[in-house]
Amino acid sequence: MDFRTEPAGFLARILALVSLFMGLGDATRLLGLGAGATSPIVAMGLIGFLLLAGLSLMRLFAAVGLWIHAPWGAVVLAGSLVVEVVLYLAGSAWVSLSLWGFIFKLAVMLATFALLVFARRAAHRQIVD
Image (cartoon, rainbow, N blue to C red; front, side, top):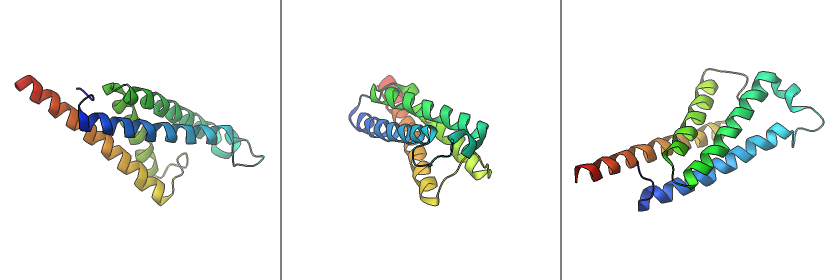
């Protein structure tokens, strides 16, 4: 798969920026910014805190991977979003999303899948030609 072609490369860079901002947003929640004097571990619970830390790291690594046009960046981003969306739909207390947050993350997940499918088809087309 090659993300260096024109439409795929542009979408990969946009997804890299989105992933970076999502990862940094998760990191601010981990640091407890905006939560007042309450510890983030107490507010989210230990498992919720560890889950958010893992998702934050995955998104930051995915941002780097997407920025350098590596296919693993899109796979890592898709994996983090699938985990979060599935936990949200399962009603887990560890994931707290608003309706707009859920729609946004679902749209980013679908765009990531579209990028992977487009890059795979473009690579297959190059092999055939």
